[in-house]
Length: 209
Image 1 (cartoon, rainbow, N blue to C red):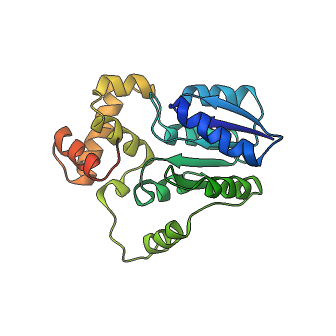
Image 2: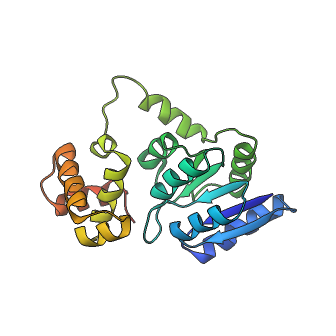
C-alpha cells in the first residue's frame, strides 16, 4: 500500500505519517509540500490513497483535487484541512473528494477514514453528515461564497490572501483579463464592491488563514 501525504508543513506531514504508519505497518508513504509537487508525484508513481491539505502555497488543494479527479478518477482522496467543516466540506465532497476531516480530528478518526476510503467508501463525520443533510434541504439559504463556482472560490481566497490580479493569473496559469472577469463575477454574486470587503468576509468566515 502506498499513501501520499500533501501538506506544506513538514511537521504535519511527519505527524500524519507516524499516525498512519502505526496502523498500516507495511505501507509506504510519500510526501509533497505543495499542489504542484503532489501532482508530479501522482503522475510519475502509483498510489493507493492521497491525504490532501487545502491551503498550500501556489495552487490550492481544491485546484489539485480537480486535476486528480480528471486524471485518476478512482484514486481515493481524503482532504484534511484546518478549515471548519461547514465552510469547505460540501464543496470539497462535490468536487470529488472521498472524505473531509479537520486537523483537530483524533488520530483514530484519521485511521478509520483512511480505511473507509481505501475500501471504496466515503468518509464524513457524524456532525458533517448532519450539516450536509441540512445543506441539501430545499429551503436552506446559501451563504454568499457558496454561490461561487470552484474557480471563483479559489480566486476569492487568493484575493483575500492579499494577492494581486497579476499574481493570481500567474499562479493559476490564466490571463489577467480572465482573473479580472472572475473577480467581477465574485463581487456580483456576493453583493460586495471591493477587495477589502471580500477580504473581511473571507477572514470572518474562516475561508483563509
